[in-house]
Every structure is written in structure tokens, then in C-alpha cells.
Image 1 (cartoon, rainbow, N blue to C red):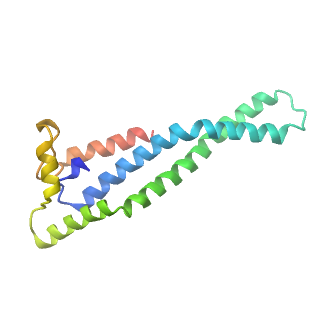
Image 2 (image 1 turned 60 degrees about the horizontal axis):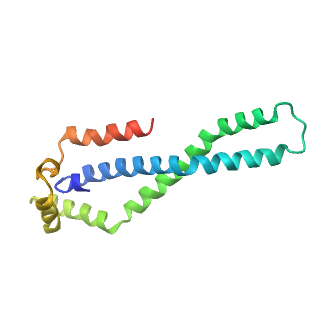
Image 3 (image 1 turned 135 degrees about the horizontal axis):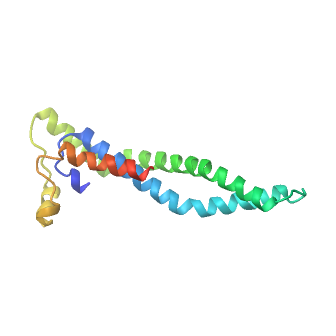
Length: 151
């Protein structure tokens, strides 16, 4: 949330968080589920086909595993992302950050949060968030990162 510390628009905050959560959840799911899913498919198919005499059974099993791995991975990834987004939408820190932005906008006052100011003061200049919030170009980085991760 550092990059969005001074972002006054709660929609940009939520959008950036969603992009980050989706990207991280997808990457983590891919890394952690591919091998167990492959092993499960392979064991299930070997057990299912064990009583049948099929020429090149190992190649058939390998092809079936490969063909179904992407489908299974997509289902798991979608569920993990859905769960992560749900959890984030109920996270108290995120909800408070959204509420602070809404209140500042409704009152037509600048966004001010003492805890964010303390964090900002401790950061080196090159990585400090802008007091005016993210530019469109900076927000686009999150979108591009998300698009690269999902390819």
C-alpha cells in the first residue's frame, strides 16, 4: 500500500490493490499447486486405467495429465484469487484506508494520515510516494505487471 499512501482516490487504491492481489495470488498458486496437481492427476489416471490393457498407457496418461493440468490449474487459480480478493475486501486496514479517502473527498479536504506521514518520512527519496497520489503512468505499471503475470 506504500505506493498508494497519498492516493486520494479510493477507486485507484482499490484497483491497485486488486491488481497486486491477483498477480501475487496467481503466481503463488502456480508455484504451489502445479506439482501436487500433476501427481494427483497421474495417480488417479494410473489407478483408473490399471485394469485395462492399453498400448502406450504411460504416454496416454502423460497426455491426459498435460491436457487437464491447465484446466485444473485455472480452476484452482481462479478460486484462490477469488478468496484473496474476498479476504482483502474485508481487511480492516484496507477498509479504513478506503474510508479515510472517501471522507477526505466528501469533505473536500486533503488526505492526511499521521501513520502514513511517519512511514513516508522514513523512506529514501527515490521510493517515496508522491503526496498528490499516483499518476496515471504509475498506475499503469500495476496494470502492465498484472497483464504480464497472467500470460
